[in-house]
Image (cartoon, rainbow, N blue to C red; front, side, top):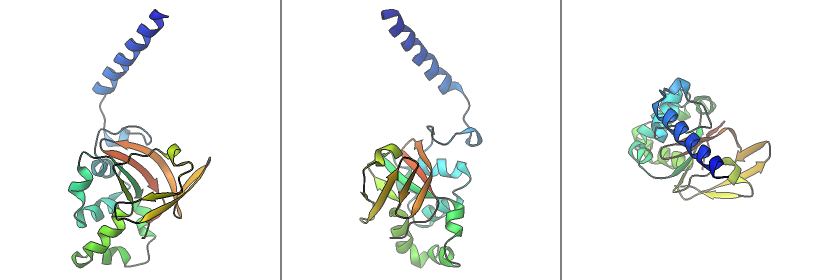
Length: 171
């Protein structure tokens, strides 16, 4: 029995060493694994969240989203932003609409919570940073946040969890 425990410890140490020395570049990162980057950098490197990152920066939320905190972000893809009515995104990115953009983006964020998709089972509402609640529908084959489908769950970052969704959530 002791020998089995020693082998397990050795395997964990070797695995930790190998993970630490293997190169990590964005193209090689696999969804559903741990990213060594914060939420914003992970989104930038993924290449499918360019609009979200631009919106975070335009809203003045970049520093907040890079902080060592614990967030859960429901992240719409570029395609999800493209499905907004024509002109909506351009209007939101104007400096005079910064408050509105912040309200929309913070509706996608849970602060001080790192929630993996399997923990959403049985959860019916989640409190967002902007104070409004999201409705959650969970079934064994899918998770819906309001009407948005979680298409890629459980991307663990240095400061939180990202769940990719197929539409922009509007408060």
